[in-house]
Length: 294
Image 1 (cartoon, rainbow, N blue to C red):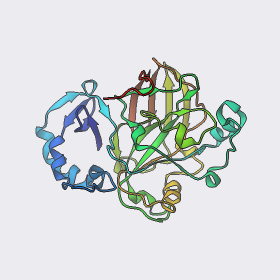
Image 2: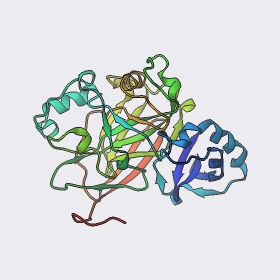
Image 3: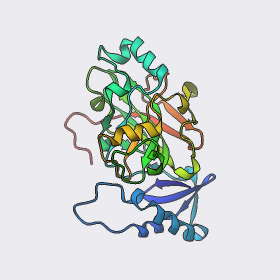
Image 4: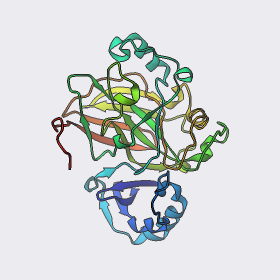
């Protein structure tokens, strides 16, 4: 099943080029009071929600996909975890290019570890990217995104996929410079997730997926998740050895070679086999320093 959030936080199921509005199925989620739970309630209750969807979809309203503004399919991830230089050829290009490494020591992922991105950086495909620091290089990075579905603490790679709710396309946008990764990769809109959540039952092997990104029609990155240094099970094992993973936590698995700059007015087309294609528009953030954003 392909689940999306769209327009005014409505829930949909993708059916070809249509969205079936199944927002009513959110009634299957238990209500929470303060303090709110440290996980995404939709993902934590995805089985109950999908069961309710089965009873609703035949009688629910439909709209054309192009009429829907697609939001991030995960609204409240407790953590957005990212894997640095996790493709061999990307590691080679970063080491070879000072515009990418800025004299910062680049380690193999097992030495560098993982890093966190701010949840406030998360948007959906329909919301677009608003670039900051236009005097510096802003790069695209296309990645397979893994959405955790069950609490996972110090689990083995052999059982890791049992804890996955589904997969999305991820864009990890980065400002190049000498600062820590999480700082440069966490501005608002610098994590794009979408176009929808494809449930894990539709992706039996996340280690064999073609992925690519085109900018203004030009292919920039093209690879396969078979080239990951640490695959999805290994990343879940690695992350859960440090953190307890909660439903809705997102793991960005790393990007292949070919990262390159994006600029305002660019149009990004990102695709991963089995997960769909998402179009993302790039603009500039225009607020001046100190201006309050409504």
